[in-house]
Image 1: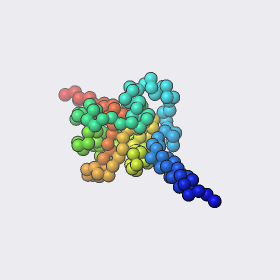
Image 2 (image 1 turned 90 degrees about the vertical axis):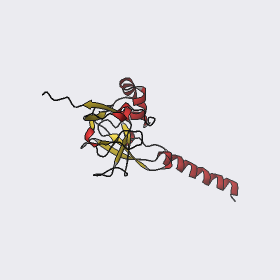
Image 3 (image 1 turned 30 degrees about the vertical axis):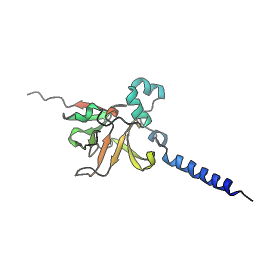
Image 4 (image 1 turned 90 degrees about the horizontal axis):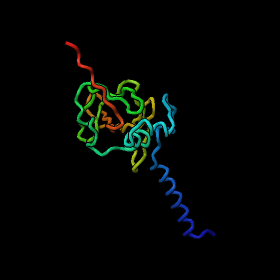
Length: 166
């Protein structure tokens, strides 16, 4: 006959293991193949430590720490990993969250995956070309989409529109 303590400990252990698997991050890189794939050493050589942590390890920056939060010129926000254009400045808005926010990405620019970190389910946004983690998308944004693409500014680079010659 099984001792009740052993049975309870076994069940608790199984639940703990299941919870650990559910709470773990599931990087987009593990699930998909991307046009641009590099070794870990190549990414580390190309990116700053902060960019690497965000783009390759699904990290995040402190709210309000990105210079792109205050970027208001016309232009394009591109992936810091592969320079793919991701968002137009026309879709950027002030969300009050401390991260650059957009209501719509450019066509064929981003992909999404389910993110179950921190005990909640969110939609992670990644660059469709290199798989770099960009941030998350939420359904509390402005019209016309109702979406808030809350992006890590250090995962992006900004390319201003060249002033036209008059």
